Length: 288
Image (cartoon, rainbow, N blue to C red; front, side, top):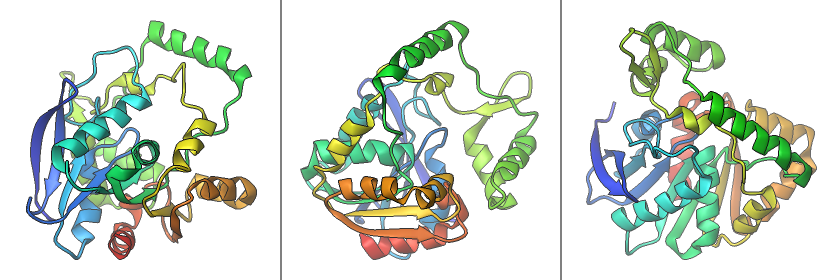
């Protein structure tokens, strides 16, 4: 297992944690995690990389070892602005190489369209974007958000790290015990009563009352000029839905005018970086 280092810097007023691998003088490769995840999840993919890279993986605000925002809710565009600050801190003069998963990929896609000159190449791992929005859904979404503010949210407690790992393997049968044990040490933190909860601000679980519409996301995708590699797990729910509704899937792909390729990874669900990290690493290096 390749050794990582922890680095903390200020990002828009928050103490941000970064996990880095490799020598700082090597070419930089940014890896962005998804919802309810942390930077350490990229460990298995980094282990499989063959070239020398300086991999930089942040814990998004409110995740892992990064400071919580202390706000009622988290806004996706705050993460877009955070990404801009991160690239300015680590790669101010050159367009960046991005690898991003799920929520992180959605954030990276919006950013890449808003500031296309800042990105050299982008590997989108299961970043399908949200469903098409409807104006009539707004009242129910806003009402749910207000209910969550009043009720509050909590992270699900697990009896122990072992229990946490067993639950993760039950939810994802492709996850090996060795990897599950590693992940929960970074995903979880022990509470005073001995239970273990995710290192994630429960406010991340609130719905957004003013969600960026799918149409606006597609508008950003269409402005990306960097080559984009789309990677999906053959056994992921989103990919299986795409197989049932190919027209909708093709419409998403067509929004990326700079799409350079589509790769489907066998034996992988949504978390390709957990299920088939060697295959993902080979795709990344073959592309970037």
